[in-house]
Image 1 (cartoon, one colour):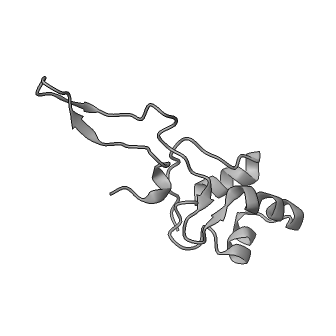
Image 2 (spheres, helix red, strand yellow; image 1 turned 45 degrees about the horizontal axis):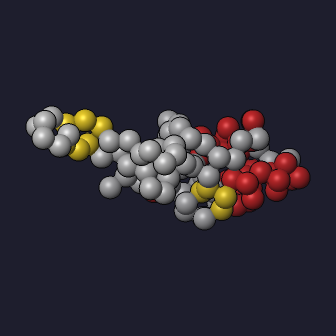
Length: 101
């Protein structure tokens, strides 16, 4: 099963059978984006909550990680935190490459 940060609620990346055809195809959700990343799942902290705190305190990524623990455990949210600090985005609809620890 994919890591929960990778998929939004109701999303799927399953490969399924096309009924009656005997061929496989990707199945994509019809009710919204396939990917929704909006938080550090290890600490259950939303990026929308982290951004104002980071701006008020003047944190860079290393300082945010030290102060909150976000990005410091599994690391899957680290590229999103980096982009959040650079752009102010707090919701992402794409998978970003995981950065080395």
